[in-house]
Image (cartoon, rainbow, N blue to C red):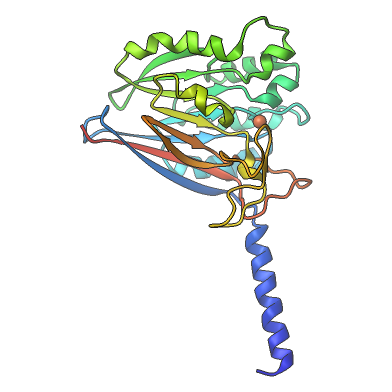
Length: 279
Ligand SMILES: [Fe+2]
């Protein structure tokens, strides 16, 4: 190979590498969970969305909504930072309007909704579109004839920002203590992945979180995230499906898009969780 051809080849390889690394189009990531709490013919398909930060994915949010609709979800979970403290709420409203009839929707706040100091207004917008807003509480639901318990907690920053006088973690344990008697499959929405040791003290079967944005910079097979808020460098829970004794923890890398904070090998993701029974 002459020198000129070698240089062109190397340049093409480099350009392709950069294109893949910086690709920021939406992707769909799938996780599969088996549970003995469902009969073998039963299943539920969940879509998990986190960290939208009110970003607008095309006219009427069609890029994200079309991708979600294709999955025909039984349940939609919004695990915080859907709205933002710096970005107008318009993107969130359009998103909720477009998905309101797709499936039952459950939501908890993230830190950015709390930081907005308008969290009550934000929650009222979600409620306006029929979303179940979970504030240190849980609800019982039946989906595909399967009994479920869906719990959720506000982001822990709510205590500081609203000058509340309770211990966030203890309040959570107290609220969900009575669920230890329940036999239904239990799902917890909590924006922060770093509190997994706390979630392990509860009876939830599945915990869904966001917040870490995939650790912003990833290298496939080598680095699952460089930095995540509240976890620091090389975060343990940057994104993925983590299995602990008796508990599945799914951390979404989120659908955030901020040109000032490039995502490397870390495209925004819609997460689909398929839960199947083996009873
Ligand atoms: Fe967050």
